[in-house]
Length: 101
Image 1 (cartoon, one colour):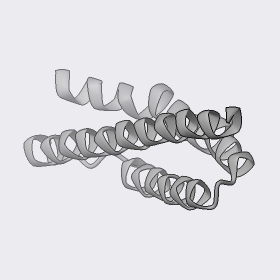
Image 2 (cartoon, rainbow, N blue to C red):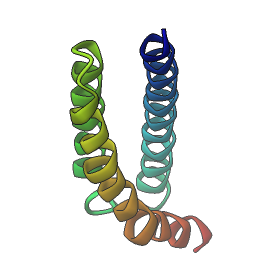
Image 3 (tube, rainbow, N blue to C red):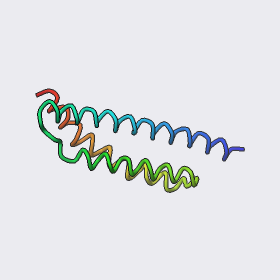
Image 4 (cartoon, rainbow, N blue to C red):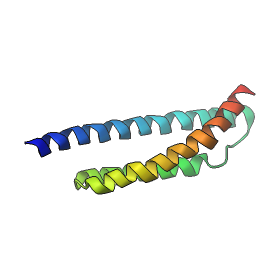
């Protein structure tokens, strides 16, 4: 059945996304702690962004359990994309600058 096959691949992709985002949160948490310990500086916005990412992952998991592909699509297109864009534009450059200074 085509729809079952499609659902299988969709679930596989969502699992990969959530795993990758979870690893990203772990890595950026460690980097943030290293910067705080080494330089005594706390990067504003990181904790809030981590919380928001984890909230998105939880919502994605709930939508996946309910097979709500529309909610999953919206969460990925809008919430996750916006949060990761914030990381790309603002937070990662701050981390890079502090690590290299």
